[in-house]
Amino acid sequence: MEKLWGGRFEGALDSAAAAFQDSIGFDRRLYREDIRGSIAHAGMLSKCGIITEEEGETLIRALSELLKDMDEDRISPDDSFEDIHSFVESTLVDRIGETGKKLHTGRSRNDQVALDVRMYVRHRAAVMDRALFELEQTYGKIIRENKDTAMPGFTHMQKAQPVTLSHHVAAYFEMIRRDRSRIRDIYERLNECPLGAGALAGTTYPLDREMTARELGFYRPTANSMDSVSDRDYVIEYISALSIVMTHLSRSCEEIITWNSNEYGFVTVSDSFSTGSSIMPQKKNPDIAELVRGKTGRVYGDLISMLTVMKGIPLAYDKDMQEDKETLFDADDTAYACVRMYTGMFGTLTFNRERMRKSCENGFTNATDAADYLVVKGMPFRDAHRVIGEIVRYCIEKGKALSDLSMDEWKGFSGLFSEDIYDSVSIETCISRRNTCGAPGVSAMDEFIKGMDAYLDEGCICEPDIYGGKTDG
Ligand code: ARG
Image (cartoon, rainbow, N blue to C red; front, side, top):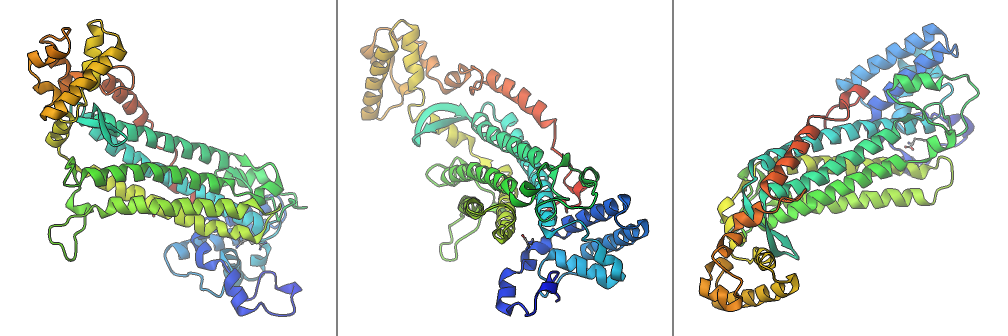
């Protein structure tokens, strides 16, 4: 296929070098952004009198038809094209002749690709926002329904204090809420239009950059033409936000894998998100959770690739930047698939409430409350801590829980204990007394849920499909 830049060359590009530098294998996925950008550019060229109205109309009509043909799989670029931009332009020239050659007036592939990638990230950020919103709704349902489901909270993987399932899941809800707010910030920052920056120094044509920016749904044109073509910080920011999403999912998956084990038995992963063993008939493995945990490393890798690609390249465009696409696509595809899979898996977990409750009772999760009891009766906290420590040691020796101790045994450690100690160390009391803002007590959780529901009512940042991308996958 003839190159867009062939004029200056006498010899042909070595075929292996051509294959090495071509990007059509992966940038074909930007065809919608590329054609949408070209339609806006053609309309602007004609409005500004740089091409005639008729030429503008011909270009727009042909581009719209090409978009439809590609959407409906009537045509797709083969590997003889260097990149998606060459494919679109050459197909246009095939279809409408000379007028097709005018499309690239006042434009470079540098601002064109910068536009395409920005529009892609913007679209995918909205798709990701929606997927995370659905995850929040899944969490929301479990949070509302489990305010009384006691379970142990852990530190150092040792039982610490009793919480509720509601409270534990609400911790993840908060993480995902911040993830969405990070994605929204990125969306706001990247939403400036680089089209019109040219190769690096703008153009001599009287382009109306405000017009193309508006047409393509951007807040405004970018302010510096060199910056417009030479940075991909929004790609780095986006992959970095995805990496944090993955960190959160991975931690939760690690918990699900542990909780799903025979030893814990807190949850049962549904059959629809588990797999078996080819040799051990009894096995039901939480593969989906393990894969989400495993794929986290891959998204981190994409982030490091992108940071490294960008760190040593001088202004303005350098071909190194072509590496932005595969890392972006891989990180985004992976994280998106993980969010969807994780949401399905989490939403179908069976919580074994009895096991969780029992687990609170046999791990001294009420020891802090027993110490607090003595403090209320007048003992300084440090002394109370020591007394309860001794009681715990005694219980371990006797194989008892605090609630199994007789009144005489309690009194043997301190005269301050009386009958009400039993109520004070009951799991229900330990939870229900914790009602400071953010704590697991029912009234604190009711407050949390009020805020959560108001926030969920706000919905998503935008409709993903309004910017000309496919809504999914
Ligand atoms: N395929 C290139 C990329 O993805 C398009 C821009 C090419 N520009 C250039 N000056 N060679 O970055």
